[in-house]
Structures are given as C-alpha cells and as structure tokens.
Amino acid sequence: MAYFDNIKPKKGNIHIVKDRCKGCGFCVEYCPNNVLELSEEFNIKGYHPPYIKHEEDCIYCQLCETICPEFSIYVTLKEEEEEIEKSKS
Ligand code: SF4
Ligand code: SF4
Image 1 (cartoon, rainbow, N blue to C red):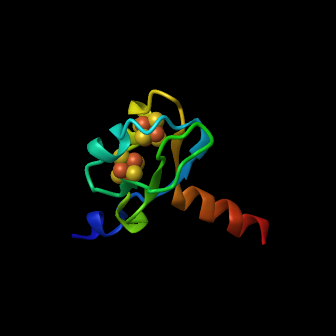
Image 2: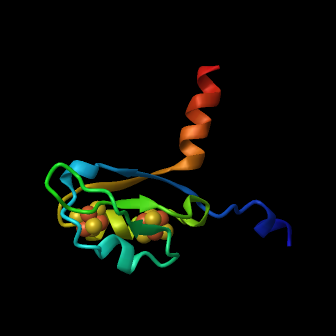
C-alpha cells in the first residue's frame, strides 16, 4: 500500500557514558531487541558497562534510556542526525 511505503522504521544511535554506569544490567535485560550486552571491561568505578552488540537492531524505543538509574545511556534518532549532516554539506 502506498501509504505504508512512506513509513520507515526508526533507528537509534546509542550513546553510553561508560564511567557513569553501575553495571546493573537493566538496559541489557529490558531492551526488546537484545541490542546490548554487558562488557568484560571495567569502568572507572569498577563496574562492567554495556556495549552495543547489534546496533542495527535498535528501534529507538528509548527504554534503555528511561530505565537506566544512572543516566548513563541515551539514544538519538539516526534519521534526524543524517538530515542535519546533509544540511551541513
Ligand atoms: S532504544 Fe530500545 S531497542 Fe534501542 S538499545 Fe535502547 S532499549 Fe534497545
Ligand atoms: S541501566 Fe544504566 S547503569 Fe545499568 S547497566 Fe545499563 S547503562 Fe549501566
């Protein structure tokens, strides 16, 4: 249907502020698409921050951002950033 041809799924750019993270794993546990995983590395506080395992699967639901008790993860909309980049060039 033509109407739906114009609807593109949203894609997110995930940003992790590693040294704020307390390694609780909420973002990993509750992400609906298993985009994240806790890493083996230690941050400055001695916790394991998450890393992005499947960025292409992020649907910009922002649940990770909402659920993180330390404000150490946030997501921006990929299309918007691409538009801004295009307008600069
Ligand atoms: S925005 Fe949603 S899909 Fe993307 S990493 Fe966060 S919880 Fe997962
Ligand atoms: S929810 Fe926040 S504090 Fe918990 S592991 Fe994820 S980024 Fe770290």
